[in-house]
Length: 172
Image (cartoon, rainbow, N blue to C red; front, top):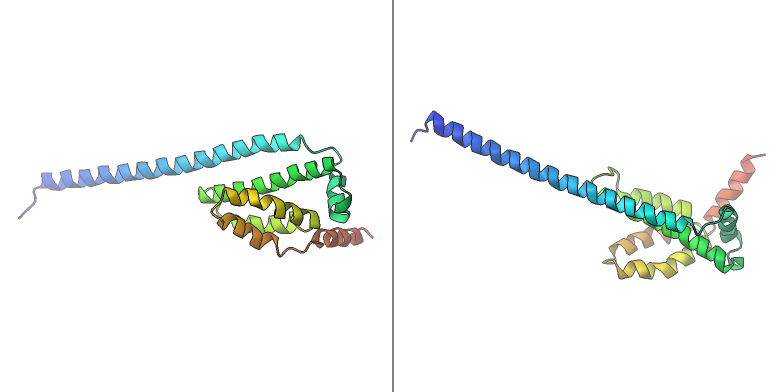
């Protein structure tokens, strides 16, 4: 059975059209993922602005107090810190969403590991996570919270004190 030149051209054309449609479908799917990640980032930015209104000009003093004397925090200072840590968690969720959408090339857990070391090295942050993790667990299949636990729990609760003290020694 021999194919005519016309049959070969028609078959090749049909294959090209199908391949082109598959490529367009892939690009639409990728654009949708990117648009979803951008919408998530915009939504997060709006809430960060709201949470930012709960932080005073002297927030560094509140943060230092949470590191050195957390039992002396006032209710208003605790509210400031709550907004701060909500923002930290939001950044973790954004890193995860962007990685899942293919926008980030590095795995979101790399950011989580760094964030855990930088922000969860004090008693207050561990206590905050212990209380608020239940809210994250309620909207999760458990894997996200388990990943956060694995990154946060091993961080020493005096890590930030050690870093501050080491940096103070460098000024001499």
